[in-house]
Length: 163
Image 1 (cartoon, rainbow, N blue to C red):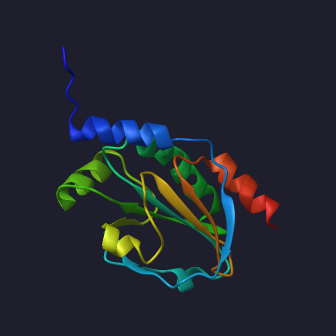
Image 2: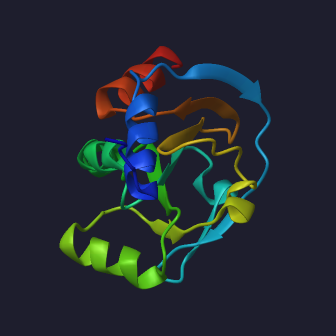
């Protein structure tokens, strides 16, 4: 019997394949300013966070590895938000904004969330799969990029290694 897989199942499979251990590869590239408007209407600019690490995380409500990493990213944000790091989540591939709004009502995320698309994402970098994360150092320099799930421990370890 021939199996047929829906687009959601294929996407979840792709996300699972990309959920590799977090090893941020150093990039050393100069950052380009990005300007994003979050779901609360606040503008998020890279330059507004000089002096702090900035983690930009692309995710989707249907992506299993994305959903698995959200609690760790929330804990990371809560532990560092008033000190040395911010997280900005960018929701991708949603059928309507209401899907993301409903998701956030059920599973609140403490950091800013932006409704994204691939054109907007190009301000930051390439998003070949979900989840994808970009990390900027306190000077605003893009230092790492990861396709696949990440953890709080791995981000904190990377930050410590660069002090």
